[in-house]
Amino acid sequence: MLQDILPQKTLLQSPMKAIKQKTVSGMSILLAIILTCVLISLGEYVLFDLNRSVNPAYDVCGQYPDGGRALYKHSPYPVPQINTYTRDDCRNFGLLIHAAFVIPVFLAAFLMYFFFYFRRPQSKYKILAWPYFIFSIVMILHLLIETGVRFVGNKIAVYLILGLIAALLTGLVVLLQKKFGER
Image (cartoon, rainbow, N blue to C red; front, side):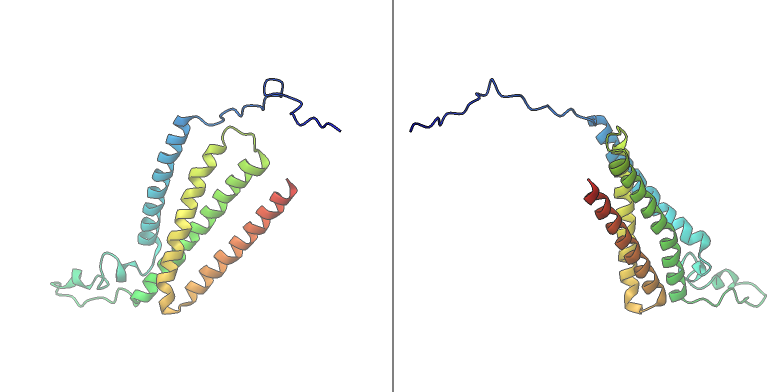
């Protein structure tokens, strides 16, 4: 009862595994990193400018914290009542404006990632999904931190934004898991 304990194939006879070709160049990775930094900077500027231009209570907490009354300090005319907003109103409006920008950007970046990694997995352009996805994650983290800071005040805007983000993330996780299970 002799048993053959030697392998039947030697290293030279075994079929070679297919060598995986690089699908992304080093320069593309470098440019994607730079694009990520540019997108994050652009997003921060957009949030600042949106708050400054759209927020109706910006004068209270923005450029003129006194509501613009200092402009009329030496005027012979009575100081007009510019607005009746409070600093809390300004912060709540700002939070809602930021959410109105960040949540659609996050959803769009997720859809781009989903398209390239599940619909077109062999695409040579899927490297582009990462900078936008990382940018959207940074923006959503920015919004969550801003919301967490406002959470101390127990305002309705905080609950609305956290509820929207929770619903969005739940739906996206379900969608990802569904597609992942189909593979």
